[in-house]
Length: 87
Image (spheres, rainbow, N blue to C red):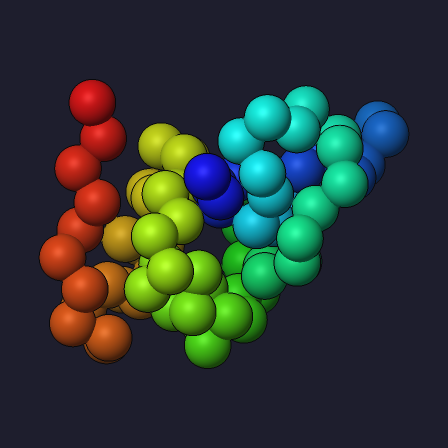
């Protein structure tokens, strides 16, 4: 199963990549594809929306944090996706 999750890049300041990664991989493991960037300090987000939509259509599940980022940027509304309900 594939998940969309955050992968930490920054050493001193937290900077994250949003990646599509296999569930069995650890957080810093090898990813399938980089689909975005998130900087919580400077409040910057960059998304590759077509790749995110591709993985969501194939059944990828976003983590809670990634789901919140996608909702905040209206990715679900623009592409008529039902919001993912997390347990």
